[in-house]
Length: 416
Ligand SMILES: Cc1ncc(COP(=O)(O)O)c(C=O)c1O
Image 1 (cartoon, rainbow, N blue to C red):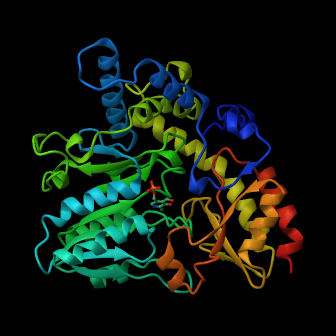
Image 2: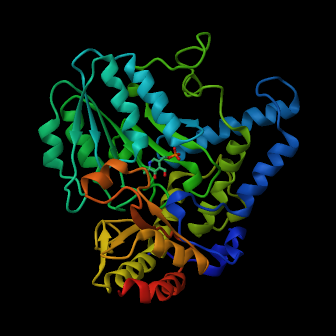
């Protein structure tokens, strides 16, 4: 068990948590520590100029963008193995990747897409049918929404090029065994594209251990600025042509895949994240933590702390919701942190999700309902996409007391 920091000290890193509203909608986007916000502000006020021009502010801006990339490589344990491409969102990066892969498609190549996924990792792959690709579906169980590796095996063939799937469904919260999937897909000769958006706020990404080819996440759900990251292994990206301008060399990775460059101020914000990680990892040199020295061990320790902080919160949430006969948890009922993350969805036998959210919101709790862009998953599970499910998604800075207060507010409604 990692040393757990004082919850008030953790929350003090995030000034926005001091407001009245209790934010339990972190699967939609997390809050940022004050030093991330300060770093973005400082960049905008001091170094907001073009890269590579040669004057001091430009040199500093260039160094910030390069530092952010190197730190992101280390953040996912990918240093030396590949590069992280940055972009405006996971969705846009998936489109860039699918577009680049479309140029290499031969008629009859097979692309496996996963019904459990967020549309960001589905729609862009379906487009490849236009280039002669054959789409195969890795289906979910209609009852549980879960995936079965044997179902994947049955859709793999020697023509499989890509298997695109989520590490965690943003609706179910269930953790998929990425390493096992990658091993199976590689044995068939394909490559994996993993959507890690719903996993990344809760656990450390380890692209080296899992041996993944492509792995995407949203930095704005991991306590950072509104950007996305896509790790690409050197050998996997070398097969592709990046979409950036013709005069940018093919081997200028990640820039060849960063159309028009990246958010410079966002990079400044990313460079400030090590301070949070060092704090959560109980690293003594917290104030001095920086993007150049923050290594993967600190990242792992920080996320071990976050998982340990989330464990009692998700346990209480599942217990309180599960105490109502009319409530169905959409996803695993288990509170085991090896099985799920703290993103919990539910439906009620008779009360409309809109009503449940309305009651919560008017009492000062930020939760939401909907299909959460896992439209196909909802349809397959016979859940109406509108109003969809009610989703409650705490992270490490939320507390058992917040869960209790929300569940007290909903008690009468849910017990109907
Ligand atoms: C699981 C999952 N994948 C992908 C996305 C899309 O991420 P972005 O907003 O960075 O495009 C989301 C956003 O909610 C998500 O939850």
